[in-house]
Image 1 (cartoon, rainbow, N blue to C red):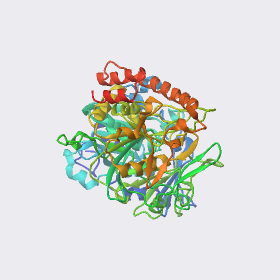
Image 2 (image 1 turned 90 degrees about the vertical axis):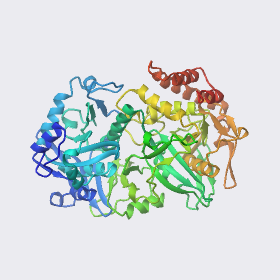
Image 3 (image 1 turned 60 degrees about the horizontal axis):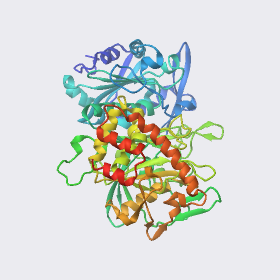
Image 4 (image 1 turned 90 degrees about the horizontal axis):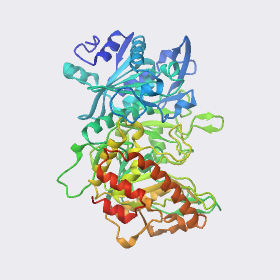
Length: 632
């Protein structure tokens, strides 16, 4: 028994101890209750702000200021560092197999002492507790969240993202309820033990995955921490949760194509679900030449209808796959109940009227983070808080319930086209870079697998603290959230890719194509074009081998609604400002980076097929070689 509220409920010993000995506990059974708890009316200041903070060594240290706004709850962190996920936040506390940084190696001691200190601190607090499913019911982990009651906005974000189970359902199960995951939130330890840094500790016990979140930004824990739980479960059962958005694209001619778009943070996952951002005259700005200021536009009177499926996490559970299907394609379903939308690219009214309308007049309250809103105002997604005067926060966010998103698809979908997004810098002959990717490239499955091993984080990433230069987000682009071994995830992905060879794999850049600044226009154009033509294989005479062998093949030309996209945007070496010399130097940069990354996967436990693919890449394989390797 934990409390008189739920007398028959049996939880893990540690959870029962914390909840039964705490100063007070309130169990929540709905998002609406947490909305009310996020800003306690009797604890706001004379302006209407509720300050979330904690005693640290006898001094009150504020973490965030939270207020009610007309369209939900707005929370802003006082420390700009806390407005983005720290890519080094995860550590592993247990002794199970892992390639990740362990708690002992990073901090020089066993985690058990801090674990007990965490429980002691929680017992001294007023607590909030609720129940949820990490993933889908029956295809994930029954879970419990325990956090300080004054961190209601954080609990709200977690409940929106992962869902919340009504207390009545838990009470009805009584002794039959068993949880296999738990999250403990203890914010002041960030200051007392971790020098102000975000730290999330995974403790993978035999029957229980414990997660300790020592910060109040939802990204590392409420979202990516739960993602890590799902990846750990999938690693045990030989499946994964893909880091992707998924959308059914319905053309003006009523053809439906399902596109799954993967990539590192900032790789365009959310943008794949967005309508094109048009100029005031209705045209799409394809790109602006950074050398001479020339602009190219595309007039597209009628865009495709978008039916969103997933925004960031897609369960690829084996129960969803149809072994009897003649087509070897992947089937997925959303692993979340809400979406953690980044809106840094929405800088003024009218940029994205669709999302602006949804967030200004939502059907139910939303949670806004890093948005400059005052009590009683309307939070506007283009009004970003400033990290310092004149420098807007690059990671403004909101959490939007998927059930309220128009046209949402709740059922599993089968993927026709699987794309991978890469943030690219500008490339010129004078300043060559890896920004040599055209509007899209078609990849053989074996090469597509390599791109998922490398998962370049790319240019100007807005979502995390470390954004300089090119780095790898790691296998699947979800490696920062995985708790186990790199090689195990590589093998899972290899089986998945090679077993779904009827899917078309493509590579899409954003931000720049050569010397042209493009934003996400390449992604939107590729989506419109590929949806109109469907996922049937390209005829041999429609594609040419890319000059850089890591880019597979590129279309000779593409035509969208009668408008030809010029070769400058398809074969970057044809841009006069880049030329073959600048392109080849960029290809060398990309190839060297690729080779350095894939060597890490030459582990004795790597699937022999994967080893063959990696060794072929290191030997300079061409598109035809990768096509043969895809049939292995």
